[in-house]
Image 1 (tube, rainbow, N blue to C red):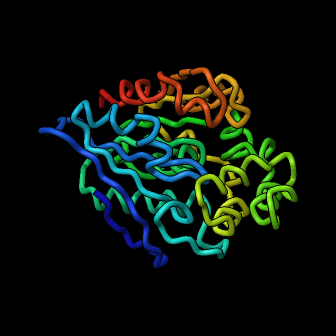
Image 2 (spheres, rainbow, N blue to C red):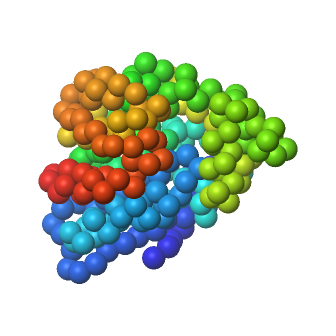
Image 3 (cartoon, rainbow, N blue to C red):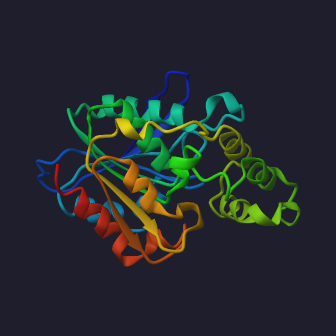
Length: 257
C-alpha cells in the first residue's frame, strides 16, 4: 500500500506499508533507503521486506525527498539528512506507535542516526553501508565520494563527461531513472557536521560489506555507539544488500525490543 505525507516545508513524500497475517507484538519497522535508490529497490528487491513481514512485522518505507515517487525540488535548501530525519519523525507520528525500530542504509543510515539521537520512540536501530566516516567526517565518507565530484557527475551532459572517480553515481542514477538535478542538490547538502552518536543509547547493529569503500573500518562506528554490535558480510556498497545474509541479519536483530 502507498500513502502520502506532507512535510513541514510543503513537500509530498510517498511511503509504502507492508504487513501480513495477525501481526507481531513487536514494534513497527521503518526502513530508510540509500542515495539514488528508493524504498522498493533498497528493501523489497533484496528481500528485507519479505524477511520482516514473514515474521509478522508491519513495515513502513518512505521514498526520501528527491527520490522515488516523492517530490524532487532542485533547490539545495530542501535537502540534507537533517531534514530527512525530520521527515522520519513525522512518519513516526503518522504510524502512531509508542515505539518503532529503524533500519537505514548509506544515506538512510545517516538519517537513521540523526533521528535516533532525537526521537525516544526509536527503540532499536540498524545502520548499514557506513563506517568510520560517520565518526570522522560526520556522515557519508566525503573523502571517498567528494560531493563536488558527485554533483559534477550527476549534472554532466552525458556519462562520458562525468568525472571518472564518481562516474558510478551517474550510472546508478541513470539506471534507477532518478532526477539527477534533485540528487545533485542532495549531494551538495550532504551532512558534514559531527553526528550526535553519544546520544544514541538503543541497541544498534552496524552492518557493512567487507569490501565497501564507503563503509571502511565500521568497527570505529560501532565503538562510538554505546550499545552497538558489528556484523560484516561479503560484498561492496551495492553488492552487500543482495548477499544472502543481509536481509536475515536485519530481521534477526530486529526480532527483539
